[in-house]
Image (cartoon, rainbow, N blue to C red; front, top):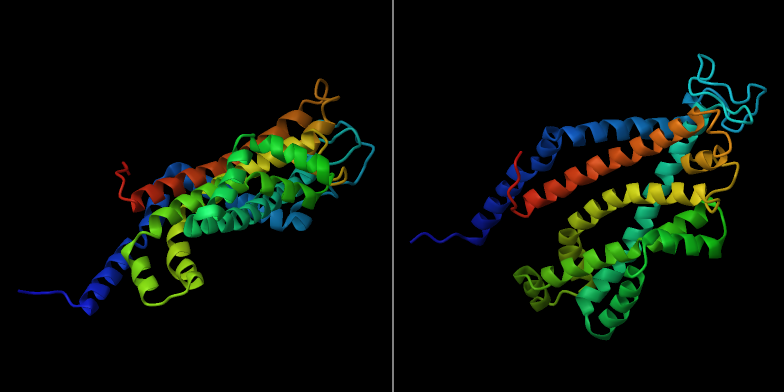
Length: 299
């Protein structure tokens, strides 16, 4: 009778991990929407990083060419103050991506911490945290963001903090659900039996196995955060007036859209392209996670 030794089991597990490691990348390349989303997102990120070099004009530089339609000099036209719309949208992409990524990072850390604590320790701590999460869950994220910005005041970081706090409940629920499942696994019980501390168990065993759904949710939430920032700026509750964003440009153009169509079309298209590229990536990552969980997908 052949019995597998612990060393043989470890080697076999390592080989299986190596064989499945490139699965996510190969699936991503097979998904046309994901490839398009990744390509567009990379282009937008490069534009955002190199905005000072790529933008043909100062985004706040005024000129006498007011409400000029698209031309060779101003490919996307100018606004009512003669500011180049292309330059303002390039800098607006920089702000949008910064807000989206920063918001999700903060919400993931706070929500993940609350969910881990609630799921791992349970009891009264779980009741307190989840009652707060349930209360926040009862209100739409955007309404919470509007209220918090009204309290904090306008400004880039106030918008980031407000939107991130509005998204905490999504990450907390996912983290708690994953912890409740993972902490019952045998390897967690074995680590606890061997005298591992709670911090070591959470850091070495629970967090790595709970990170995939949180990352997927984070990717999807970036697009929601971008839309939230655009909505707040459109309502006049977002960033400062001298900070160009898609929502602020649309808000400023409301009085001129009837005779300057480009002021409404191009900012809206820019926001749509940014959000769709992130959504395509998020959908692909969710499908990859489904594959890892053993669900059947048609590749």
